[in-house]
Image (cartoon, rainbow, N blue to C red; front, side, top):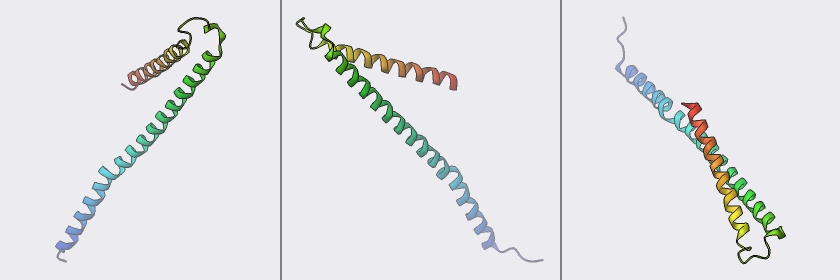
Length: 104
């Protein structure tokens, strides 16, 4: 019978620990990075969409002649734009709340 070498056992334990550490730390961090990247890209696209919707609504309401004549007519397009953007944010929050309930 051959005597087992203690260095072989130590190398096996080291390889086992390294592979376990990679499995439990590196892989989840890669997944988290991917998840975070998609989240940041999505939020940037939503922000750009809201910006352009707000800009479009503002320009549309500024070109309508219905608001001319009153003393506060110059502020009405801004009020309408803010109201539309608040509705846009409320719609997003409603969608996120429903998605959370589906996950649970």
